[in-house]
Every structure is written in C-alpha cells, then in structure tokens.
Length: 218
Image (cartoon, rainbow, N blue to C red; front, top):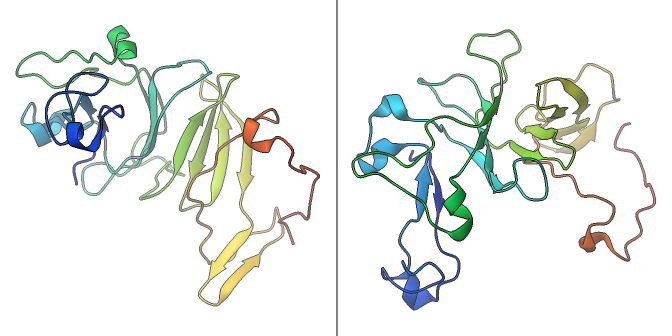
C-alpha cells in the first residue's frame, strides 16, 4: 500500500489536470507535495517510511498549528503494530502553494511537529488497524477517534487525556443494539468511522433545532 498524503492543485480544469501546466499553481495535474512513503517515488528506503495505512488527513484550520496537516497514522503489520496521531508541519512557502524538494531527497519534513500515541508493545496499545481520525480543536486540544474500538478521546498538547467517550452502539449481524454507559460491553462491533466537533456557531447549524433528543445509552 502506498501510505502517502498527496497535495495536488484543485484549481485546474479537467483538461489542465491531465497535463503538466495550467491551474492555480501552473503545474497542471502534477503532484505538488507528497509525504509518508518516499520509497514509492524512489527517493528513500523503507526505513524512511513515516505513514502506514493512515486515515483522515486534513489541513488544520482556525486552531493552533493552522496550515499543518494532521492524520491518524494507523500502522500495519508486520512493520508497525501501533498507531499515532501525527501533525506534519509544511514549509512557509506552502501557503503560496510552493513545496520545496531537493533533488534525490524526499519531500520534507523528516519528523512530525507533534505526535500522540504509545510505543509498540505497551499495555492498552493505541492501535487501530483501520478507519479512525483526528481533529485539532480551537483550544489546542486534539479530538481522536479510535475507530475499531468505538472510542473518542480528547488530549492536550502535553498528551493528557481530558475527555473520553465510549460508544454504546453495538453492531450485530441482525441489527443495532445498545449497552448501558459504564457497563462492560459485550462481544460485538462498536466501530466509529470518524468523529468531528462542530461549534454552535457553525453556519451549517444555523436555523436548525439543536434541542437535546433521546440519549444513545439504554
């Protein structure tokens, strides 16, 4: 699997995207920046691979780290049996759509600007084989979705967990059921694809009834 994040010019026409010129950046459909697995484009070896089956890559906006990219770096057997949330800082010129790459070397950076997640083999490993996600909040904390486990957590920049929610929604072959919050969950699937936090002033919520409804807990 390539395990890469790729930036292309979204300001192209279909015709321009098929070539190497035109668009907002003048490079047509060419890749402007890529990160995660430089062995794919023969610029490094497996030792320099930084991403493993990542999910939820997104630009941080209107929050600390704005302009950086955040993703949930899942991990994959046999090379990385743990997961991390990685914040990737781009060069200052990236704001103008210019990404510098030295000849024969992979795109920068060498290391993430911020990373959350325990090391391999730790009890209660922060390991998700698929789905999952991460979002930087305006207060600087990071909302993380542990997808297969059906768990959401919020951590500070210093990695302190300040909030946790365990989904009570069970997915059976015969349908959906619920368990009481705080009770031991039975053997079933509790997967969450990704959770996002929206502030009350979000334009998409304007004019909508936000009155509390039924709780998920049984």
